[in-house]
Amino acid sequence: MTLTSKQSARRKLIDAATLLFRRNGYIATTVDQICAEAGVTKGACFHHFESKESLAEACLDQWDKQVVAMHHNAPFRSIADPLEKLFGCIDFFAGVFENPNMLKSCLAGTTVQEVSETHPALREAAQACFASGERQFQTLLDDACRSRDIKLDTPSLAKLWMATIQGSLLLYKASREDAVLPNNLRHFRDYIEKLLATT
Amino acid sequence: MTLTSKQSARRKLIDAATLLFRRNGYIATTVDQICAEAGVTKGACFHHFESKESLAEACLDQWDKQVVAMHHNAPFRSIADPLEKLFGCIDFFAGVFENPNMLKSCLAGTTVQEVSETHPALREAAQACFASGERQFQTLLDDACRSRDIKLDTPSLAKLWMATIQGSLLLYKASREDAVLPNNLRHFRDYIEKLLATT
DNA sequence: TGGAGCATACCAACTAGTCGGTATGTCTGT
DNA sequence: ACAGACATACCGACTAGTTGGTATGCTCCA
Image 1: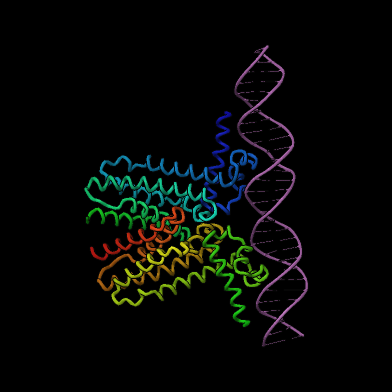
Image 2 (image 1 turned 180 degrees about the horizontal axis):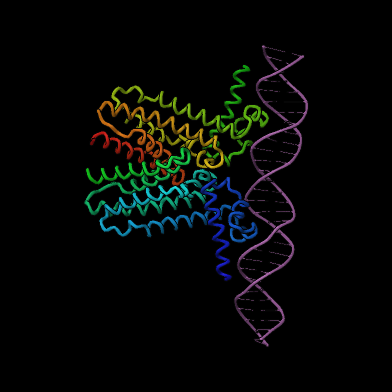
């Protein structure tokens, strides 16, 4: 009871902050809003986190772990053929973003745009999220290349993958067109197909 | 003198605000900072703009026009062959971003991330910027397709183009790696080449 | 002489963060 | 078993400073 309630206050703050940061950004979200959303007082918030920035750092750490976990638990993980597994991954993310209830916003992406020049710790935490995502996708790419005996610049393609996702999320926020994400991921898939077919 | 000084105060505010918004974001930039950067007092600022938001709207309008003008005056404009012109455009932007003195940040991209849920007028102004950019690129794509008698989904490719730029700028802010932009644009060019060769 | 352009002084609302205090344990020696 | 010492989680009023925006007046040209 003690431990769970201890965990839950901290956890509730991180979850509430993550939601509000994704929706309204880091700077525009106030600590009071986070506390209200979490159903926790300000005193409790600054008991668990020494500053708003360190709360955001904790959010980014959790975000990183959640995305990694999503990769690990996704259905495409069980596909045997490395190439099909790679395409399964791309299609999986396209499907995730097709869900209209999904909040189409990446914590790392929204945060880093605002704070890259002013909050180095947050910039690095966001960069760590991107690096994890790219590493996981690159592994799939490397396996696919090996299975077909093809050499590609997989680190650079993994960055293109992340850029395509982040750019598409940004354009979605401007246009509110649900098709942006799936369409751009379809193009990405198409490019990978051509690369793995031609060479 | 009256006209020029009138124009210049307004113009100085827009230029200063654009710079600071690109660097630190819309919310984090204060009106006082903008006034200081512009060398103008707050009274003058609110004489020309009724609110911070309307100043940002003016910035986005000017940004849109500047990007359109950059397209129109770029060297690739004079290339005769539509396909070469298209590739000239992609290479032109890759070159622009390769300049280390270039502030790698798009006003529309940074702004819309922060305010898409809270400032509809700014979201629409940013969307207008994206739409202009996509329209111009799509024209080049359409011409290239026509010249080679190939049919492609050019509106969707124009959106991919914009997403690639925006996503790459975002990843640059996180990683500070100069190669991100040119590498991703090279991949984009490669994809277009394959599309125009295959079909 | 009147109005556009601009400066100075100012304000109410809001912000992140603080601080004194409470409630509920947990551990230790007897 | 139990008192006393201490630790952790939490509360919410408070503060010092900041924010976008305003009220008022000066200046200069038509």
